[in-house]
Image 1: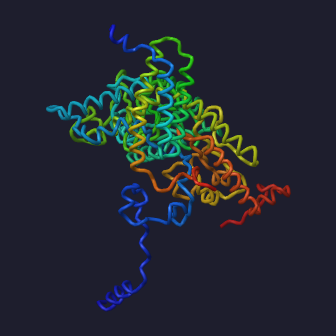
Image 2: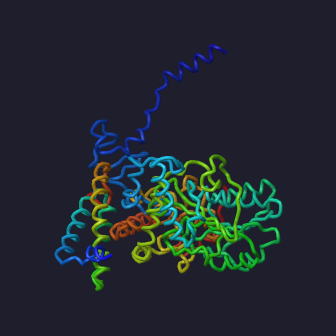
Image 3: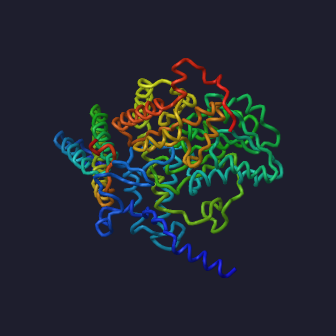
Length: 95
Length: 458
């Protein structure tokens, strides 16, 4: 229990900002227009929602969740790039 | 005789054969594979040409009621089960089976949690159509000696209506309840339709075409009062509106995966245990899923559905807020620029990801064809191939001409504001163009009442 509490220590501000930057960078790597836009939006909204957290354990939980989401996003950005369609969304085509 | 046959075959050989259509598979080919094969269509910069339609890019997708894309987080959960975790969940003798079984059960718990049920009350099926078939036909077949009557509504999904039609052929009675102009059933009519031999009431939670939410708790209350099993098709409701099987008092509930960002080919059936509802299985075999649905459970798909349900639970509020805002943006955008736009179905009791609009004085098919950069449909995907107006809209009492020009916009988790703005722009442009050509619109502008015109029969 004690070790769990130690592991769940709240992250420092630079750590949080680094996670945010990594998530946004990974979001940009998605080839799919909709997934890319969603990931960017969800990351920013997620951090905005977690901004008001005061309880250290809640902050630690949100941070751990963000970390695991980053792993998912990194893997999926690769998968999406492997199967990227040749034709982009009309939203990305210059009119 | 022989000679004529020879001549015919010779003619066939000499007549110029039409060029084979471009293989569809190639359109879906990956970038890596495309390097090896010839370019399936013209340069990527000039867009896609398919079925004779040229589009500058992949259309923006606004047909979420037909199906939704798989969420990358869902795919991430599924992939290990397509790679090394390939065990049959019913194998009891080795690790492969155990890990698959564990994954299936954890997915079952996640689906159950989203609808307030016990995992033991859920059976995985191939989708909502199968669940609906098991529910409607299975219940009536099981209780066939005492129960001979089914109540459903006119706006149900085709698979419920067709199952009822099938029961009618077997000699069962079916009452198709009408709906009001807002798409909602009249509870008093439901009450008076119940007979001593009514074996099932089946009412869908959220309509697939018009997104109208039926008063589930009230219907459940009536069914409880008369002690009639209540089935609901919640394919369009799962993960979008809060579902509680006890509040709704449903005995059976059909769920689908591919409407909530899980893959196609997976669904679930909720079957109440207390009081127990029993069905006659449609599929006989190895006795999987407690004998209700034999056949090996597709672990990757089930894991996908479980992941999608877990996500839906976490994201429901966030998605709802966003999708509601987008629906408002779409409706206000279109209404702000053109008149004669009617929302089909209740606006108050509606899932906000659905917007079914009719445009007066335009021709529906031309409108849909003109909107080739927006992936929308006129109604359900199952009937979108026919030119008939939707039976759901007709049940609402929508006039024939307005039912012909309906477009269903389906907004989802991945829809962006820019897509909505583009959809508004393209819709308005197309409607205006069609109205310019329409003699009807000219007459209306001149103040002629179209309803007073006597049309020649044809």
